[in-house]
Amino acid sequence: MTGTVIYEEKDSVAYLKLSNPGKYNALDINMRRELVQYLDKLSERDDIRIIVIMGDGEHFSAGADLNFFKDISREELEKFLRELGTANAIGRRIRELKKPVIAVVKGYCLGGGFELIQFCDIVIASETAVFGQPELRVGLIPGGGGTQNLPRLAGDKIARELIFTGRFISAKELEKLGVINKAVKEEELNEELNKIINKILQKSPLHIALAKEAINMALETPLSTGLRIESEIFKYLFKTEDTKEGINAFLEKRRPIWKGK
Image (cartoon, rainbow, N blue to C red; front, side, top):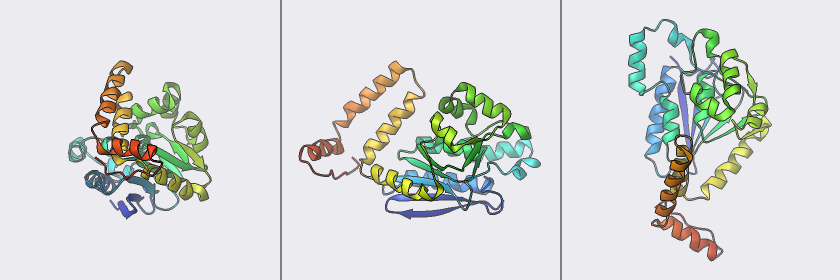
């Protein structure tokens, strides 16, 4: 149980780096606990506008550390899951955060690692990154959200194929499917990340949070319900200082000064 998370923050951005030396950043108990703890703390910090998740070294994450599952009893597993909340506790927190979460992927992104990035709002990857859901190879199924997210992202048939066969899939193919946003040369990852960060930081944090809430609802409700929710959120905006500031700044041909309220 050596996994850990390296934390850094700079200019309103928090960086969470998965670090499990020698195991391709496998998600063991310690790393999962730390990720949950960091995400919970960051959800309360208004000064942090964006969260970036990446891997330490040459890989993002090869998924769960199977040593954890090797001799675990059902009772021990249930205790661990109660501690985190659910098997997909990390992903659920990412989804519920009122700020964007960006994944930056190099090397292997498999199993639980692949499931983690499926919850992120934006994903950029190296062209040479390799993705997959190989859980069935070892007698498991995706338990961190893969059976639910992947069909929504890649489509039903592709998701079934990837899960049933364990086939690895390239970043370029996932870009075409819309599962990730962009596949670029590895040396261009930081430049692409900074472009996205700079564009997001120019927007109101309140508007980002509300837009994320509305988009999440689009995946959970019928269209008619989603449209009603969107309309209510849109009407609410006109009670906020940031909407007034945004409109005035546009008309006055200046940059808005956001207050997040």
